[in-house]
Amino acid sequence: MAPRTRNRLPIGGTLQEVASKARVSKAAASRVLNNLPVRVSERTRAGILAAAQAIGYRPNLIARALARRGSRSVGVVVPAILTSFYPEIIAALETRIRARGCQALVCCSDDDPQHERQHLEDLLSRRVDGLAVSPVCGTANEDLFETIRQRRCPLIFFDRAPEGCVGPQVTTDNRGAALEAVRFLAADGMSALAYFGEAGRNPALEDRLAGARESAALCVVEFGPDRVFLCCDREAVRQACRRFLAAGPARPGLFLESNRLLLGVLDALADQGRFFPDHAALVGFDAFH
Image (cartoon, rainbow, N blue to C red; front, top):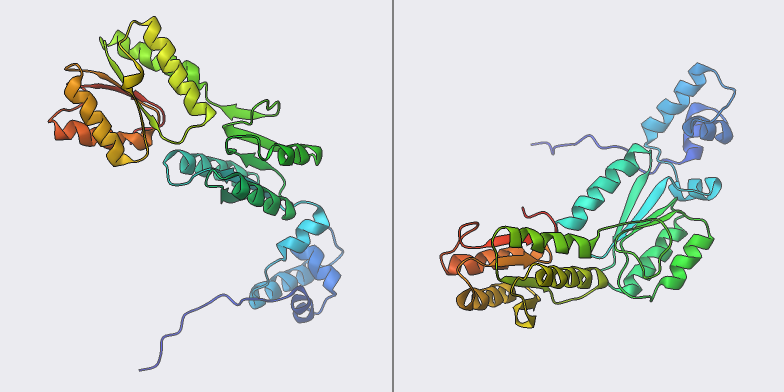
């Protein structure tokens, strides 16, 4: 039996090969392929485009970026991609960036300042036309962000922003949202609150905890230091929630600092045969899928 063959796009054609096949100068081929003004007939233009397709020509984006001082790309740097929050943000950004005829170059810093710095420097070397960054905590890369601003490279921060940042940013009012969340629980009749948070802390998370404490005091909701559980994984959330439910009221209020904590809480409720909303009320940040 003869081996199967698949139609494959040719790879690796050069601009010179396109010009030779179309029997035009390299300059004429370049201007046609880059949709730039050039005095050639429609027949010649069609021949250049056909030659490029036949040999699988792909433009050298690095060379183009150097020539145009821009790459039609935007760098996106996030601290994590294993949550539902950041992938949703990346998808929305990519859609808007693509609509402008540009490409999104996505990097993950793993919440590590060294990784973040390396990604930012790499993106700048690729001559990106802008940066959208959810920065790591601290001031380790403050100097680099200042350098980016001095280079006049458009820069916007989202979800988080460096302390003292005066540039464009899109962030959540974490303290105010937490105030509203606990107020909602109090209005629903909750008299006791448990707060489940991330073991790894940052200013945004601390603002959420501060807002919950402030609101609990204003609403006269029982909420002390022993009701704050900072957990590193699903099982830790489960065990902490089980202890609280065993000692707490029949229908407590549960505040989740992020949706990553939800499964552990659901595990604990299921262990005790409890369910939402009959046996507990829940509020929290991020979408609960």
